[in-house]
Length: 148
Image 1 (tube, rainbow, N blue to C red):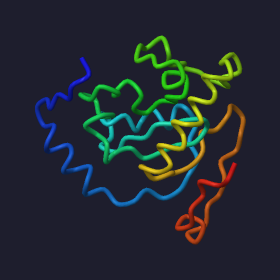
Image 2 (image 1 turned 30 degrees about the vertical axis):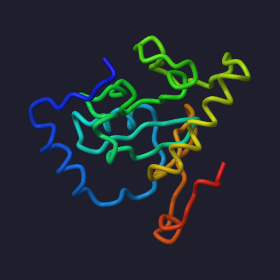
Image 3 (image 1 turned 180 degrees about the horizontal axis):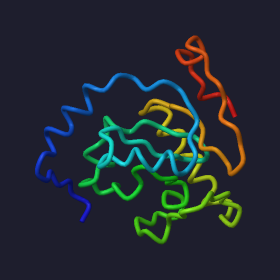
């Protein structure tokens, strides 16, 4: 179950993903994030603790055939916090994580730090009714991972 599977076109999909340009910084609603699931779009994004990361270079893990593919195009925070890879761990509406305990919230923060080190931060996950930030080209090249 935890091994990687390269289905038809898996290698071609990885080559296509490697050729993608760096994504411009922007913020995402849950609906917009879902488009980046590795199936509808070769780019794979996921959110952790309100931050969106481009995990395309980890497509063997997060792509449609990968062991963590369930998180592609989604807010993975609850699943990572509870070590659950079931659809039940993912919410279709915005998840404020307010019911998680201190240990689970610490786990989410640790996952967020790991994603910051390994993948490109591309923007924030918007709460319902929240307006996206406008990023300038100059800001786009700076490291926004410190921004809360």
